[in-house]
Length: 232
Image 1: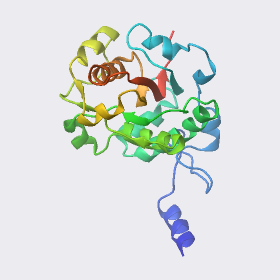
Image 2: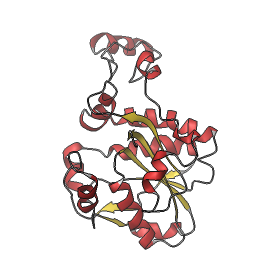
Image 3: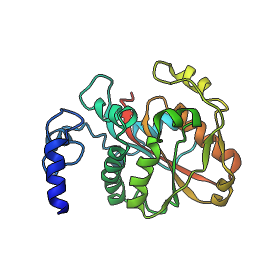
Image 4: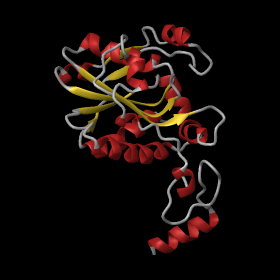
């Protein structure tokens, strides 16, 4: 009966690839096999002191940093982030995050991670969107890492969108925005993995990491994002 209902649902409301719009077959989820094969993966977890780690160097100490695929505005695969954030498809982020986490796990990067921490949304944005996409990404990674998702940072005040701002403007825009929650103190001496959907200048993740380091002694921080702008 369940299979029959699923078949009828697919007939009435066909599942489409978020990248190319092609109808998905029974074994495909969210993104068709062809578009997944063409996903521009970074391979940063295979590169010593990769460009994403260089982004944080001298600003905030991180154990490691990696993004799953390259993001370029206007490209075909940019539709993944658009669907994740603005088309009510948060489970797309969770599904991709599990695939990403499998690669991180295979090279040992998730060993010893005590918690996965999503970058928070201010409540005003949360009300409009209805969900925090970074929480779904965190759930996907945590399910592979074998640890819990912990909300150790909160957005104390709203800030303007970062989309059209330069690096300096982004840093100013996130100043004083984030603070550690009361639960963060439990993670003194622990290793947490901070997670977001995309990194460009790193301003948001740097601000979150600084808020945690001010509040928690001997905290070790790593960073993972689904997407990353091409960094020089």
